[in-house]
Image (cartoon, rainbow, N blue to C red; front, side, top):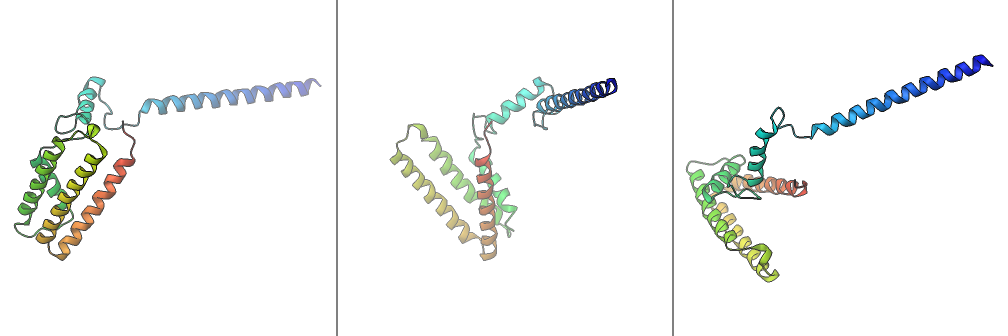
Length: 175
């Protein structure tokens, strides 16, 4: 009988040791993963070094709060370079594409500067949307006139890729 009780005590101690070791490993794993934060871009930087970068990310390239606000020239150059990744321009086309992008970037910047979406009525929003869609169609028709059939197919691929990226950004949670 004595042998059996020692055996039970031994098994109970072994189980308790294993359970406590498991809990210790679990606590260590949780504390390590919680401390990571998930952001690799600021690894190795002190909080003072991270603060200006985080502030700039919130502000955007144009220095305004919220979404990045570009001046029309920067916007046109950026759009042209993005289109150039998909469309093989012939000689002189890049300048014309930049000119078209600049024209519509100025119209968009001007149009956005005149509205405050929170204060607009639904009718005003609908009118503003219709105006924006017309400008986009006009821009598309200018590109269609500028590009040959193959280039316009490449441009259509670019637009599909942009739409895909836009949808992905919309699904990401905001910080």
